[in-house]
Amino acid sequence: MSTLDWNLKRWKIWGSLEVHVVYALIYTMCTNRKGLRLLKTYLAGKNQQVFDPYFIAQYLLVPVNTIVTNTLLPWMLKEYKGCKGNKMRAWKIKAPVFLRYTLLLDLLELVHEHGNNLDYNFDRHVKLSKILNGKHGL
Image 1 (cartoon, rainbow, N blue to C red):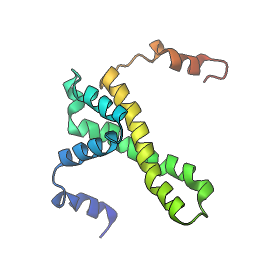
Image 2: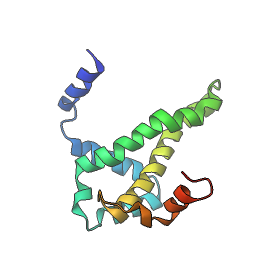
Image 3: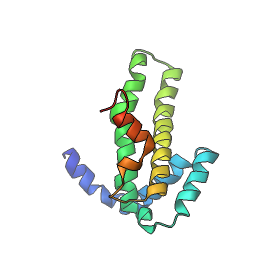
Image 4: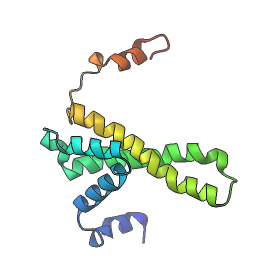
């Protein structure tokens, strides 16, 4: 069975996307008090569209997991590739959790502040304009 077939048939095991989204948010954000406070702030927001499980899955959880798994984790652990033992195993377990938490924390803050508006005005963003138009800008 191909990977695509297996992924499409997983709904029999976990038939509800909502279960995955709630579990991932709670598991990731409740690792410390700052994450728990931000999750409460996010859930108490006024923009109801950002509570949609499909929005959370597609625009928050999937990008975070993809960035951590494909980019940050290999880059972070490449120096320790030859290491063995309990310390390396602990790094491999703790690093993805920390990276997912950090990225999701930043994304939740952005979504809480700006919502899911497609018409974000990048010209008004002070830090971004410094990056784009600064001495070494694009």
